[in-house]
Length: 425
Image 1: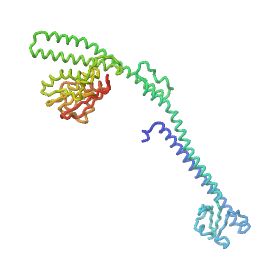
Image 2: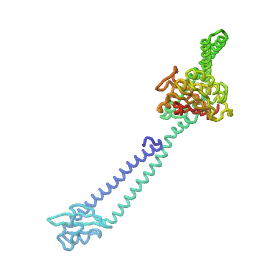
Image 3: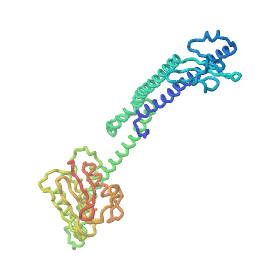
Image 4: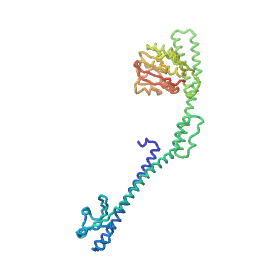
């Protein structure tokens, strides 16, 4: 469709359409005026000469006729009317036959027909030359409009093109990036640049507030978490019965999870290009074993079979990944499998380029495969006490680390989350 074409083509097309209309109307007007003047002038001239011939009734006038004029009448055997002129109406008529062209003027007087014929071959040649010139002028105007439209369009949209290049390739979120509006005139393009600067400033402020919030919350939560963890250690050294000891252990494990989440949120608030080693590093096999030890008990308590499968001999892979990010991703996927699997099994399958978490749970409808990675989306059959932020966090971590996560049906009957660790931290 026209509105989907580039702006250059739309402006050029507008030039062409305007030129086509104006030149077309002008050319057709020239042709119509030539025909009108031709008919009026020749008609008056032939009418005048025919009047003189009829009124004179003499041969002196006929003998003085130009070579391209011929007189015919029905009452004279010397000037009989030719057959191809006999059926013409009265008045002026233009006749073209074979390679000949004639102006014919006929008049009926007292049941007699008088016809004066003028050959127009020479005039027709001039007329044809004029029409050819008009046609050439029309085509040249179209070509000129194309070139002029293209050049004008390029000149008109050059500021827009430059603005688009600046927006696309400059790091506008950098604190030292200069405003764009000051580089443009006070016109529509300048107003667009000013609007972009205004929106960008608001975005910068929003991102800055988010980073400060994440950093402040992460730092402030460390102290109470350390107090809770140390208190759990002290309580474990006292005389506790088994249920009490299990509750303290659960609090301790949850505190560790919160500490990992705080670390994860703090790193997500930083730029992905930050080369900091915050959070430490680990191999996939080591992180998988640590998480399996943490989650195996909960799967066992629910009556679900859980196993870690080294599918491609991952123990020989020494690739290092960010510890906090990898632990958070594996933990959230295992927690999701625990919530949505009532019976059967859950598998953590390790591969050289990533891992899969497969379960025999309720599965995910195909129309919800993308939605479940959005915040506060928990699917049609919710489980557990979460708010639908776990998979959203996993998605953010994968995007931050250039990892790739996807979900598909599992051969176990439930869901299969596949994480491709294609970019190492």
